[in-house]
Image (cartoon, rainbow, N blue to C red; front, side, top):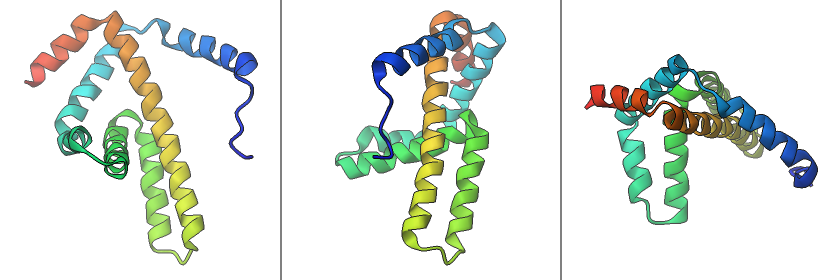
Length: 142
């Protein structure tokens, strides 16, 4: 199987601690940047967020989640977002077979999704460490 994950006891433990170290101390300027990114997402991705909150079927919610990921991704992970758009572009005009096209899009989408999830996790840490920064930035928006 292609997606077999290495055994969690060995690999996961090492990865988890490395990931925790990476998110432990977030500077105030970084936290401010993240807060500003979040406030941008809140104002620019309203429709996606509404769709995510009102979806009823699994298919509808998956679509809404993808929409939110793509929308948030343009602010959180501009490089991966651009790569997804380029993939969609290259696939739409080509005579590539459907399976291949879908596989390429799925990979680009997965990369973006992972990046957004990582950013989200870091931003959560930043919010815990610099709650004042987040409150100030969010207050300016409303």
